Amino acid sequence: MKENINILFLGDLVGRPGRQSVARFLEHSGNKYDFIIANVENASHGFGLTEKNYHELDAMGIDAMTSGNHIWDKKEIFNFIYNADKLLRPLNYPEGTPGIGSKIFELSEGVSIGVINIQGTVFMSPIVPPWEMLRAEIQRIQYKTPIILIDIHAEATAEKVSCGYIADRLSVSGIIGTHTHIQTADERILEHGAAYITDAGFCGAYNSVIGMEIDDSVKRLTTCLPVKFEVSPNDEVQINGIELNINVKTGYALNIKRINEVFSLSRGN
Ligand SMILES: [Fe+2]
Ligand SMILES: [Fe+2]
Image (cartoon, rainbow, N blue to C red; front, side):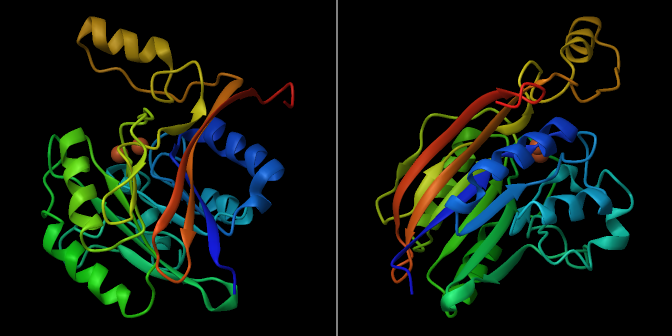
């Protein structure tokens, strides 16, 4: 059995540029990682996830997919979420919501990784506060494996930082923020050995407003009128994510490193 494993977490994939940039990135570096997680709530045209795109991302080698508030935007999700065994939606939706909020993924050589997806409560649509469920879920998974990663999909920085401390004190391996699409520079190992970052960022069009057309966003902002957002078709793309190195026996994080790469899809570099 390996002593340490390398995990890649990719921030929200936004539309086709998000999927294409990740496909290119994984073609070149995918085999560096023992386990790959991506947040896919915006993977299909910027809003939600289609079944076709779920299979496309699965075929790229993504092992686990987390999500957030936008996962419900494509209505077909309600049909295929039951069969999408790599996909999580936030744990703290009311009972009876389709899909699951956490899962233990089995790697080869007897290593398994628990992934929990939760959604924040501050400046977000109303949702059940996740904290009690989170504690119970961590304890349930710890019977099986010390390696536990949490995607906290939330808007407010202080809520994510607080979540980091809550989960670090419960001995998880990492807490990774998503949803704002802008990568933060506060990656660190917390007091009890969990890796933490407030936001992993996003994968998609580089010249964009968090992945969407610049002109749409500017028009909406300056006219105060509703404007439909389209994914920016820009050829320059960015990959935002983090790499984690985790000790298999203890579940503690040894290292967290930010990934922030920009390249052109057409130039192939
Ligand atoms: Fe997002
Ligand atoms: Fe979101």
